[in-house]
Length: 128
Image (cartoon, rainbow, N blue to C red; front, side, top):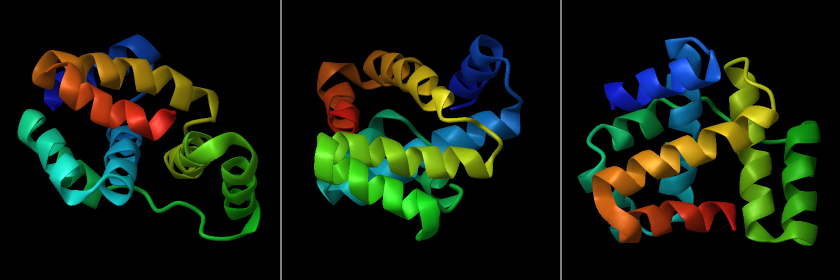
């Protein structure tokens, strides 16, 4: 997990706390949206992924963040709603909405390297 955090900090010019927060947001979303069997495959391939989910920032449950997530889910499918939820969590650690699209490919490449195409496909489901 430390290797991924270092990769995120160096490639995105963010601090380690922001990298951990963004990664935690993705882990938490995976935990919430994937079945327990699929999430277990992710945590088996990426030790510490479950801990990152547990320490993730909370998304806005109401207000603009909640409305944005609901609207994007209605018009853009579940992937769009998931991205809106990530934007709310990223905001809590000082990362803007553009960072979601920058984080995702780095995390997916790492997951593919660690767990193969099947495990990466599980994570990819969140964004489509």
